Image (cartoon, rainbow, N blue to C red; front, side, top):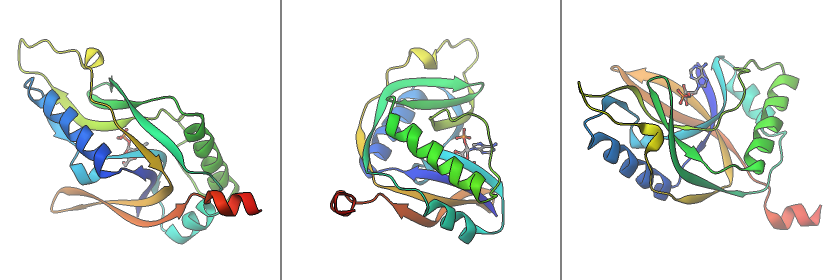
Length: 181
Ligand code: 2AM
């Protein structure tokens, strides 16, 4: 099973990212645009691993408060993968390092490349011949959402189509319970 751990988006964020994709498309850029239901933010990529329960148990060891995540309105590229950026968030980095520690402590393998928060808008981006378009100079629409859960995702293909399925999730500790402890 190909697994990863991600933040799934609110419909407001999804719609904003779709607008951003449409804006890019209107400049004639072709490529594999991420389907609306597949838009997400990856915190840890596990890859082939057949014990999702073990991963969920490790995820349950982390504790985080809900926090706000905002699209920065900036875009960038890793080669021909074009992404939307996020405002810097210390809560997001702290959640990611807690998560990676829990995975390591429990012997769960994951891609150790440093965390670079990004939302993939399209892969294999190509410009029409002679067209000049700089994704890094692009201003994208903004939106925010509350992150109150972290999802364990399965990536698989059905008839060639990439499908991401949520296998389980852990929720943020609610403020009341936290205060009570
Ligand atoms: P990407 O958006 O930069 O492609 C499922 O493949 C998710 O895991 C994608 O969001 C992908 O990031 C991310 N991911 C992180 N590291 C990966 C890796 N080594 N191989 C494949 N996907 C990876």
